[in-house]
Image 1 (cartoon, rainbow, N blue to C red):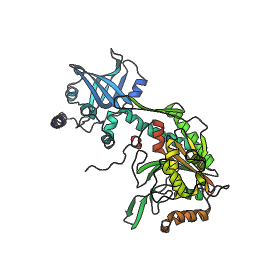
Image 2: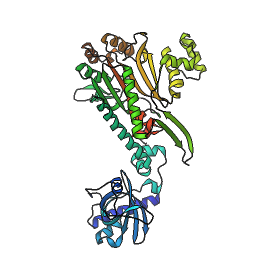
Image 3: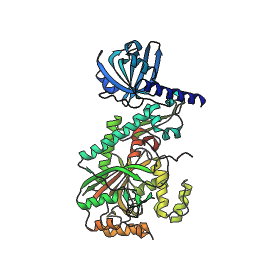
Image 4: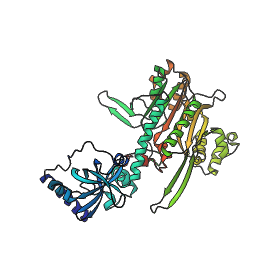
Length: 487
């Protein structure tokens, strides 16, 4: 730590020296630059170029220097000969450290080792780094530190930056896909007087001017359905939801969801849409319908491999049949106590107060969902699990829905939406129990004015990106995952 303190003091002294030279250590501008990729793509010997980036390496060969500058697109080598710089640039160059941002003008050439580079004619100092980069001094391998200081994680681990950039590209492509299908993007409130659309614990806040409690939304569903009542027929929202619940490899309290509604469609239509979208994304960004996830340890040794085959058509199977596959053909003929006993023999942990349908739900979660790697649409779930979906005409105990499972986790639910205001009220009252004050009466009033039959979907964008990129944790695909503050 003493060595690091001395280094920081040394860098601070360079800030003062730059100011003495009339150079602002943090205020440089450098317009009309080209990215490293565009320079390389249009490479021509002796071509004049302008480039800027962060200094990530420096080889001092006396009067000649080779440095790498890194920008968003990659990195490019620059070649500096002190004698070719003017007197001010020579003095400024002596004050450049790893981590600093500089801009250069120069001409392109190829080194003896075959590396395309810029021969610098003028140098502009842009911003000083007072602290060293982690890769140079102490590394950034601690997982918690990587999440807390994502900016350093991106600098020292280029693959992390590429993965997070890919997330943005995937999100942009989802928007384009939906718009090309005729869907219109909308925005609905993130602060709600009554949180609804899912069974989850909300984050609570208070609006001072109105003197009312408000909640961060757990889902946009009820507001999007109001728009169906209002006459919109194909809509989607791609934005944040908030749930005041646990944090795990698959869960972050703040997460991104796509929700979409399509008037006059059903859950089967929505399943087709989602299947087409995900295959489209896989082909565009991974180049194949077959994804290979390979994970290695710090020594570079492969620790696990997983193949996810997205080849269409995807398998569709009813919920009850999935349960029978893993818990016995007689599962639904057993008594409630018999189901509890069998679940325990199958190694499924049960809470003391679980209702019978929740016991079956645990079987599904642990023995079906967790073990399904290739895409599986599980359809026709019990109505208790999905209070906002339309009942099945052949079996009123079931609802017309799907849950899409890929890579051992739910990626997307899809419904034939319930638009009967009478049944909807009964379902919500049953879900609320004694807390009927939590009913969204405005939503129920909207339904009473008439909502067209419709199909709806939700897609967890974070989990979708995990599946496409092979990330092992949701934190790996979120720029700044929630962390407990340090003491």
